Image (tube, rainbow, N blue to C red; front, top):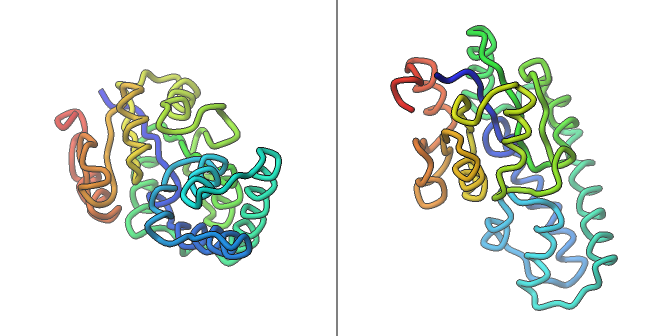
Length: 219
């Protein structure tokens, strides 16, 4: 029986992907590194330090760990400054409707995001009220595809993984959900999240299905 829901943030509740891309792009340009949307796709759902290492490796660069941490912090400063432009209108279509529905129906809801800036994003969206538990990059040591962030959410909700559905837009996030024994809903193209239990191209489609269906019949 489904009792709880755990949501990724970027690409599921809102779309800060372009803000992340522009921040990484500026950093890469300053470093005279190659960075494009193909490389950016590899960063989806992974931590900041893992991301800077992916970019470094793509450029076959040699950078000391201390310098990498400094670069990651610089990117984060650029990104956080851009978050001030977000408003309560910046939910992905369908996301606010689903969160409202789950709250009305009495389900437990957690955030399970790799972002360490989730509190700022939720504040800009006025979304904190929808979540019982906030799990983010500050909550666990191991990031996706390890299942730790979702296991943290389930534990805090006092639920078992099999009682929870995870909504994810990243391959690594779906991998993490499956590794933890959670039911999974993928948001995005089949080649990226088609290995989820169920997948939809958009959050709007997922919401329309979720509001009308009985999850116990599906999972």
